[in-house]
Image (tube, rainbow, N blue to C red; front, top):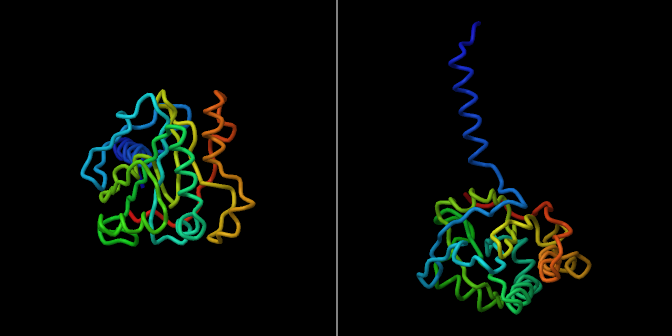
Length: 203
């Protein structure tokens, strides 16, 4: 069977487009800008925080791995508060489709934050998944750190122990805290990429 050059080229273009859609942002390059609306109806964009360090956290309140770091231990809220004490912006993003697991109504998100002590700068819903796909966020939690120049300097998991057991946190290495400490010290992030673990983002 003969395959025409046109067919081959069309397939190549389709593959290139597919790869582009799912291509992860590259650490060391400028982080992709985006705009989302937070729980208070305010627009939140990455570019609005140019000049400050920003943490992006993909979250799903009903994911057991997220629960481990929130109500199971208070680890994520503690990391958020530590970051904000250093003038770091923390944006929590839920890219679940409407009605999916963890897609809470705004009032329920506020209640969940109160119950868990969550302290992000803002919590944004991304119901069409555009921002999640822009960052190729595949798990909750997945975290990204953007430096004041707007470059992505960390992408991956919250720590190095893949489990939903809060008891493991005490012996885990918190990659986000370490990345922020390196930035504060004016050093390159020692571990710029790691493997995120958790529940699949509900696109």
